[in-house]
Length: 112
Length: 112
Image (cartoon, rainbow over all chains, first blue to last red; front, side, top):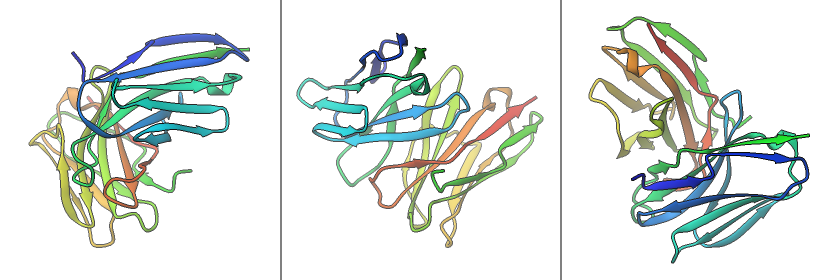
């Protein structure tokens, strides 16, 4: 079983829909990252969070440390949001390491 | 543009050969990370350097080695290459040992 699980693996949405991608992890973490990988391969860091909720534009990320679960929400989705979204957790005690363990990613396609 | 540069962008080589991948971090970032992304394994952490010293090691093969130089650029050396080493190799950097990571565009390695 992977230490970081994402669901769904694939997601197709219509433009304007509200989208949720889920991430569950089984290890102790000091932070969780959401990354976006475009079709060309480039990776962009969207959020790094260790508690609560963060918002950036149409993107919202939440984390529940007790339940070992995080969600990434996209409001008013647009075709340019089409990408692979990857959840990654930073294991170990804070400050000791920044080793990331990655989920397998969620391929999102937003159709016009 | 993340500010992290990687060279070369593409590399085609033969089994048994040795290659060097280069990464220049964002200006001022002290930490450099190397990741491998293959079709069957997904994204995997290889190694982290902070201000010239190795900080964390992941699933890095003994045939692979890395270093961070005094000017903070880093090189990943891959030797005795095998077909299975074909992958995208990403470098990332962060200002601190545990901060948000900024990814380079990657080097696509094809071993024939």
